[in-house]
Image (cartoon, rainbow, N blue to C red; front, side, top):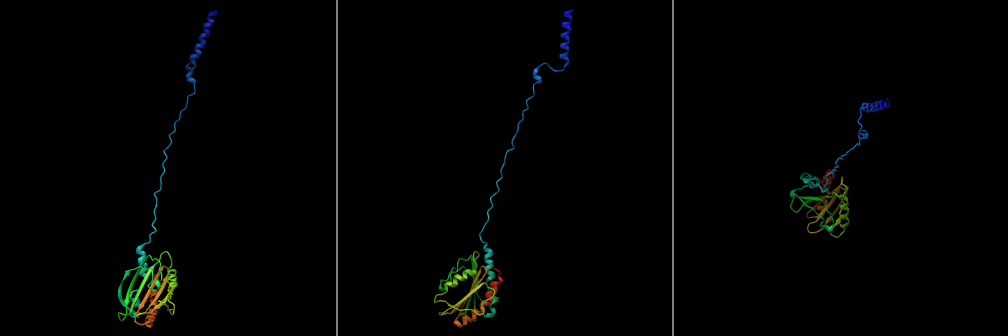
Length: 220
């Protein structure tokens, strides 16, 4: 009778274990190990293309401003001058009189006319100074025009429409009178050469009016 109870107990234990629905292997109850992998995105850097700027002056624009400042045939025809020397590119670093300095212009041009006779001539030169004012160039030249070669000759009235002006006459076999005019970055030099100083003085007075007007109209 006692043996029957023992057998019955073992049977109950076996039945309970089989009804749980879980395997007896303890590995089933172990926590799973989570593994993660990360892939870093490749880094890229972009370098901006270098930019270059040119500070070189616009040669065409400089030449155009010089041409704008020069007198034309209509400017002097009523004074008695006619076309004689075509306009050409010219750069002067100093004046013949007293070797007066004219700095370093970026561009310049010169043209000329003849009077009623070939012994009377008019020449005009215009230059542009982008890095300084023409008035400063004129002041430096004026300071040097103190030699015996040049005698100051004040124009009356003073040429209108310009920033500064200075005029003088030179004696010799062919007397001449010259006027310097400054407007913005443009400097003009007009010179009359003839047979008598008095005549040169009268002509430079007349010429200074359209020369100053043309320079003032250039807007430089």
